[in-house]
Image 1 (cartoon, rainbow, N blue to C red):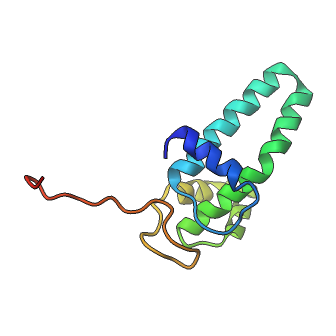
Image 2 (image 1 turned 180 degrees about the horizontal axis):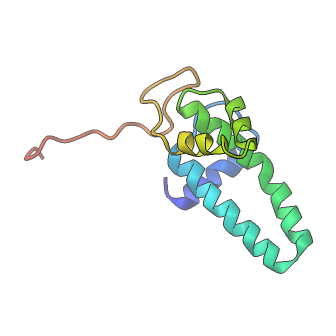
Image 3 (image 1 turned 45 degrees about the vertical axis):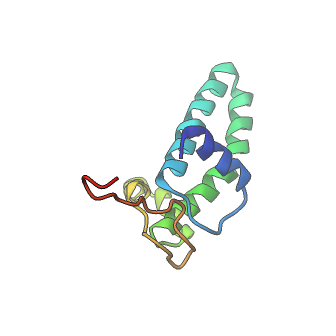
Length: 120
């Protein structure tokens, strides 16, 4: 997914906890969220709080769907509330998702078909 597709996907599924989210969807939304919050903080403190509140639910849902992609329950995102253990959540978010179908549904990105060298 490109950045625009990832961000729009998160807003379309802003309250959808079911299903799976690809790494690109999660990380592009994360970059968008941080950038938007920094810009809002530069404008005014109230703008920062409003943007943070507006992006909270989409961030939580994409995090839950990202964990679903690696076969974990969305409740595992609570581990990020513990300072050092939050690094585990980052590692899981960066991990490649399960191929094919898992307990939470089909893969968000179909596997890329590999072409044998020399074959057209």
